[in-house]
Length: 398
Image (cartoon, rainbow, N blue to C red):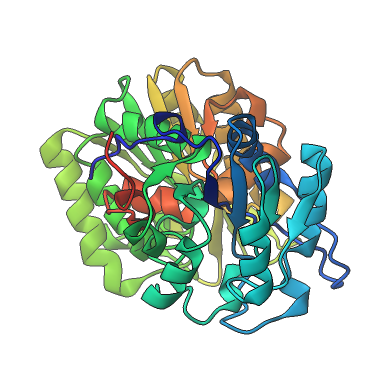
């Protein structure tokens, strides 16, 4: 896949209407009050929006929020986003009552350069997730140019992420440009040694990533629940730990492939095992291959922590996706915390692949020390897997 795409700086947007796909899928208070609990994704869109306004464009912004599944759900309205965006921009953001209905069409038609319109939640339309050509055409009819800046949604071929590019010249915003440059650069031409740290619960969801990284990484570190499938595949006893029986052969294949390619594949040597999946469970440190019956591995042990932290010390580039243990339980977060701390101290290029790893780094206060924290968990994972991202493939090549 070609990651060298035209950006908003490569086209003339003066006096034009720009359909801007943002990722405003922000966390909201559970009580239905419409309070945004973290506005990071709104702030991330500001550089592109401000640039477009400086260039005298009119901005028609759109985004999804949650999973309304084609139904209008007032609690998933983007109205609170429009209010917050207005505050951050210091100018009124006009809110449309629908996505491509009469209100949106009238407001888009009347929009002047220097103004911002936010369409209602794109997933209120049934055709959005089906990439319905008619919906894509109606969205595109509101603008002259399409700018894609929702990295968290580019792995989905939806009407607002890919379909609209069939009707308008399509380029990337600054957020996507940065993701493509940093993650794309780390995959295509990394500063070596390249160390990949992969955690999370399931081998099945990471097998494609491991397979792809075995072609380019110097060291791959495995943590999290998926480590027990590797341990079991090599004849270890894993007690009641998370185990994907069907994936043991794949795990062994990866071990063999790493050996054949001369890639160091590090698996946890010891484990913090618990007698229940609970924050206050009893725990003990055991060898990963000798977890007693009735016990389950919930974090990497101290020897593994030392081994993993040592492996990142002299790295040139580190990519991290997925926690080392059950990070939600403080007693089983030590492995994840130690890895985050080690990354904060290395001089390597450090790339955090969104999701739980990004949350961990932020909670621990190490976010500022990382080179790049991806804004899209699923998208960064598919990117690392070498899959084509529909919302990027549709953009004009540079």
